[in-house]
Image (cartoon, rainbow, N blue to C red; front, side):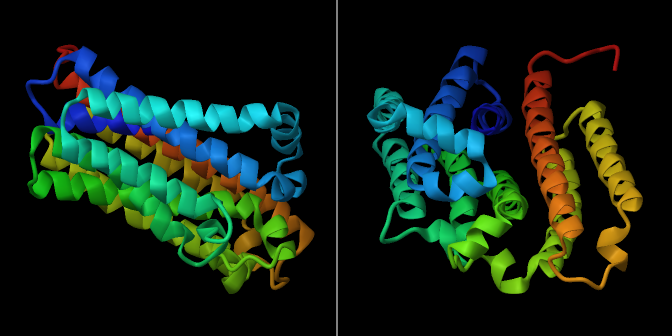
Length: 281
C-alpha cells in the first residue's frame, strides 16, 4: 500500500514528474514499509500465533533471516533516499524507520498502546512529507494530502486491530479497541470509515481528479454499506464480545483493509491520469 501512496503522492504533488521518478518514490515507500513490517513481524510472532498462525509460522521458519530482511529493506529505503542528495528528504525516511522501531520493538512497543493509531498516522504521512521535502513544496495541497493519507493509515490500523482483538486482549495490550471493548470499537471504526469520505472527496476536488476517482470511491462506499446492512448483528446484539461478533469483526477487518488498498490504488491511478488522460472517460 505504501508503494501506491508514495507513487500517487509524487504524481499529484509534482506536475513535471516523470513516470520513472514516480516509481522511484514508490519503491522507497515500499522498502520503508517492508522494513517496518519485517521488524513488526519479528516482535509480534507470539501474538500472531493466535491472530495469524500462518504468518507466525512463516516468521519462525525465517529465523535470523527475518532480521536480515529488515536490515535489507531499511538499507534500501535509506540508500534510495540518500541517492536523492536531499538531506531533509533522507532525514524524513530515517525518521520513518525510527518510528517503526518505536512501534514494534520492546520496551517502547507503541503498537500495544493507545498511541498506535497516532504512530500509524505518521507512517502514512511520511511518504507525502518525503516527496514534499524532496521538491521543497509545502502548500495547502501538501497538508491536505498528508492529512488524508495519515488519517487513512491511522484508521486502517484500527481496522486491523479487529482481527487482533483476542491476542491483544490476552497479552494485556492497551490498544483503543481493547480499552473500548470490541463492539464499541467496531462501531467506532465504521464511523471513522465514513468520516473519511468527505476528506477523500475534497482531495478529488483539490487536485481536479478524473471522474473515475469518484466512481471507484462511490463503489467502495456502496459495497461497504451493503455489507453493513446484511450484517445487522453488530447493530442489534446486546452481547459484548460474543463469538459471532468477533468472527464478524475479523471479516470486516479484511473488507476494510481491501477497501483501503483499492482507494490508495485509485489515488495512484488518478495521479497517472494527470499525465496520461483517458479521453473516452
